[in-house]
Amino acid sequence: MPWNWTYFPDTVPAFPPEITALVCKLAGTAGILGNCHASGVPIIAEHCEEHLRTGWPICYTSADSVFQIAAHEEAFGLERLYKLCQDLAPILHAMKVGRVIARPFTGTPGNFKRTPNRHDYAIAPPAPTLLDWAAEAGRATHAIGKIGDIFSMRGIGALHKGKSDADLFDHLDRLATEAEPGSLTLANFVEFDTLYGHPRDVAGYARALEWFDTRAGHFLSHLQPGDLALFTADHGNDPTWQGTEHTRERVPVICAGVGGGEIGLCAFTDVGASIAAHLGIPSHGPGRSFL
Image (cartoon, helix red, strand yellow):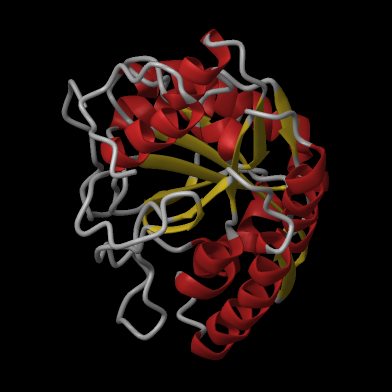
């Protein structure tokens, strides 16, 4: 990246007074709740009752460059939460905070649940990405799940959303047979992270892996000659580790179809260059193809 990210300190309060004041102004409230490093479920549990009583948004961060806002979909309002995050995002992006994240939930204290209506307002990529390269070359592009948020909707021709990873995999299965020849599809499955990794749910993580293995096998059976399927991740989130943060170990890069064989250690830029090479489109980044 051509800049250094801004991270908020692991203190209470975590946010500068001017940012807290801005959130209050945009939300029309007299204060915020949280204002610390936290994981989503515990911070909502701690402040749900006070949030419903006062209407103050629950604001928290993590070891990532993020500003997260949790609010009740009905009592606070989903569209109001989205607007708050959307209005706040340009100011925090200018400070080089990577994402402002809307974290809606429903229910009552002791019986709440986060909804699938999360929305990430991410800083725009500093340069064209693989999706931009593909779109500029006239290729159809598909984004499944949070990909649209991650890439700030740049280079995306069709967006496919769902309420669960199962819904997202249904889209991936469908596109395996229906997507345009020579197209690019990116998918992001969030539940390993949100439901099992951060809460350190080992049994749930194991069940999710078994589910994914089954679905992946079905998906791979639909690959056509010349297709490339590549599986990787943006970070680790070991459910057996202490704390609630990403664990950031090296992650696998696994190819099926075209590109079989040992790759060795590679970078994300190499993944982008390799996919571009497979599609026969120019690669404008520093990566090198391993295909």
